[in-house]
Image (cartoon, rainbow, N blue to C red; front, side, top):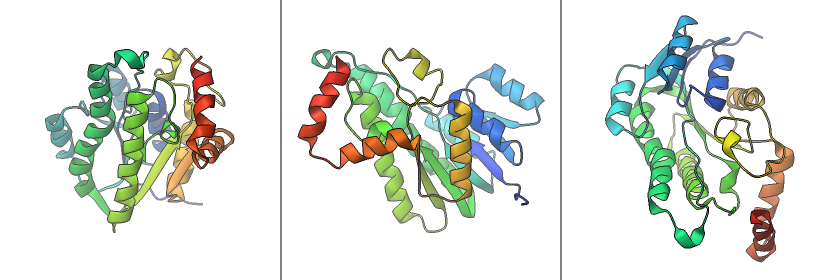
Length: 239
């Protein structure tokens, strides 16, 4: 089967899932890898991959970067951060603001800047998290940002008529971000496995991609049950 060569923009491309997506898509497509890590972007450039250096938390940088491209087929908004609030009694509002800005507000910048660059019939892909399915310990900032991001993406699926929108909800993926986690991560998958699932789901124009399903379906099931059944489980997880 011949795969049509497409122009693909990937944010958060210099590490983790984003880097794996760059490698996967560059096998058969023209990729624009976006990120802040100059050495990693330089490495991509030596492989013939186009790059854009910008910080998604800067609206001006996002718009300047978007102004340099046009007529792309797929935009994958993958960049984000993960930080936890260790003590709810000592709520860290600075951390909360930082995470909400990076994961949610910055996505708004990207939507405004990049949607006009997507061809009619093209695709927008937003990487959220399965953490949005249920309230999890220490995830006041991260979980809230991802829950809002998932809601935002669902609304875009309703509203956008000429662009197909895909929501990605990964479980635990082995990345530099999750390497910092000090708790068990069930059903952990590699970045390469994650990128393959995303690639196939986007190719099939899925509305939602979630994986690994043995983990994400468990979370989805509990999200349908009364909160009082989940709350004691979540509290035990924290201990």
